[in-house]
Image (cartoon, rainbow, N blue to C red):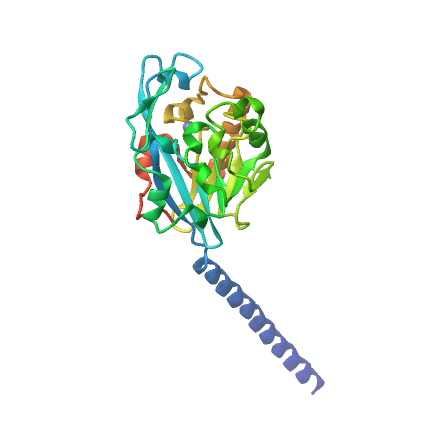
Length: 292
Ligand SMILES: [Zn+2]
């Protein structure tokens, strides 16, 4: 009799153990399904921040690669909408160009133009600069800072090295400084920064073109991984050949950043968009469409 009871206990505990395991598996699968369903919806809007005709493309190489060539560059800016806030990435060309004839820089290298101001472009999205929590610039050259001054209520996410560079006495005398002068809510970064803390929007430190140059990584629910290059590369040829422009803060740093960028792009299987490439600009959906 004792043996029968012992056998029964063993059978019952085996069955309940199996049930328990199944219960754990079911719970795990349900949690996974829920996580998939709830994958954070981040939207990327691409907008036109003007147009740059590069009259002397040779300045985008350290050698004679582009001698005698010219090329049109896009000059995009981007809105990243996250359920917990909104980020402006880059700010296009100077707003003063709107309504003017195309302007050729004194050295003849660039002819720049801009059709519309950021305030009017945001209006079409029912937004104003006050609706932005953050502004981040790939770097502080004039073709990326144009509309930045309008975002004085947003927190400026800037590498400390870039901040020190652009607020130096020498830079304060030039054209790059005025648009960022009104950005007083500053969060200084030293390396990569996960903007919303969930891995969907990450600023990646990629110094070299300027002391604190950075690129933007997005992990979108449907489109997957995206990388916006800033000016790590200005054109596809420079990505193919690790080409560095003649105007560049530190060539060695840029080459190291290119290696880090390519390794990260491979690791995350990211689609890369070169911000000044007209071809890449055309691939991105424009308002009212967005990438998500
Ligand atoms: Zn640029």
